[in-house]
Length: 409
Ligand SMILES: *Cc1c(COP(=O)(O)O)cnc(C)c1O
Image (cartoon, rainbow, N blue to C red; front, side):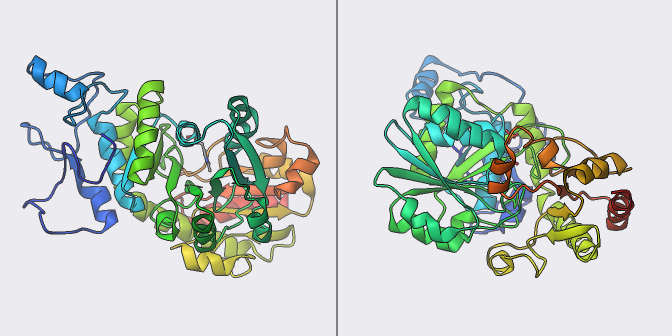
């Protein structure tokens, strides 16, 4: 029930049985499929059902006793959700996984299942806004302590580890500043102190970066972003070590953040194109970042694969490409940021990222407007910071829209 590559009901769909054959993760993301039904469908069917039937009382007893892996109820497991989970497990090189209704329920479950009162969570400071709210507002209600370390000052991290530190939580690249954390270094740090390493890999995606290769115990995702990639459904997933995922599964099975089978089906199909989509997103982003880097209205442009990125060497070491996000600072500050958004003709203004359509955002006046100026600056959100989620449109059309909007700033 908790994705383990090719467990219950799942097979790799090839013409001949694949027994001894091993396939690349991206092939598994395309060919992993729920066992073919008697209808001989080619594309994967959608199992839109809340519960599953048993032939007799004994089979039902055995399923409830965990003696078999039969599906019981879609809050626990569902084939359309399992197929998505299995593909994510393959892509991340994990042992097991569990899919959830949103990225936030994946993040929350990874905390609640593994931390208890008296434990300390250490987190890098530039993290997704709702994750920050969970850590600072809700975890303390359950007696779970937290503290932050600055993403751009790794030299301060080791001293922040306490005797009761149970987990280190990070994002790389960070949101929205695109700072990078050296996964190899942080993997060694957490091993040395025997603490769990939990990585939000949403921005990079597993075709670009595999935190488990560097020692991560858990990887969480918002599948709503690049994984869906077309701005349609919400979803999330946690993958990692089998014994940890077991605890997360048991927590979710009882508390109910299950991914809807429909969304699982959509996301499973999305994974079939993740690798090619990310290659184009990253190709477009690099072209645009390169073209913008000396623009007179910008004080800087940041993109992990631009040689001018302060952590370019880390990007080269741990990422296959620079990803689909870039950011820049308008010399005109806050007012220019608003003017830039108003002047765009094609790019969307919307609270999402990782879509086929390019999206511009101005954190200081929107997502991070509730923070004080000082709090924003602590996480490198400057007044004129613009984040672009680069879509799949022609790179020239995206660039030209940005250039014409910059003219008006
Ligand atoms: C969007 C996002 C989340 C939360 O995911 P939802 O699917 O919106 O719940 C978590 N982490 C990062 C980095 C995100 O961008």
